[in-house]
Amino acid sequence: MGEIKQVIVVRTDLGMGKGKIAAQVGHACVLGAENVRKSHPDWFSKWWSGQEKIVLKVNTETELEQIKRTAIDLNLPWSEVTDAGHTQIAPGTLTCISIGPAPEDLVDKITKHLKLL
Image 1 (cartoon, helix red, strand yellow):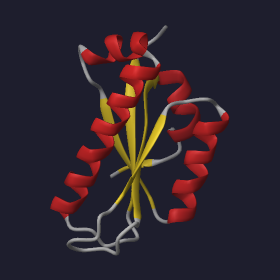
Image 2 (cartoon, rainbow, N blue to C red; image 1 turned 135 degrees about the horizontal axis):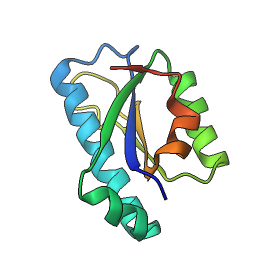
Image 3 (cartoon, rainbow, N blue to C red; image 1 turned 60 degrees about the horizontal axis):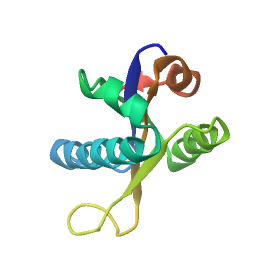
């Protein structure tokens, strides 16, 4: 098993402020890590010591959904964050997804073409 990392993919079309993006990314990190702790404890244990996280961006919900579907097709752990709608965006809006923590080579199959946020 190679390196383990977690990637968060954020939508940029929503016009979220920096603080809102930070909160959504935080939610995605925690949800993703907790899911992997339960489903792939060996990946979680290896990831826990360094907790590598990369935040990437997409321009639309359609792009985000495509990445999620690819993660599902590859049996990679993923989590999604939908907003509660208390501040900047409508309730239930998909803001970001987490892929992993999972082996870097598998995560890169889905995300290597994306740009850093």
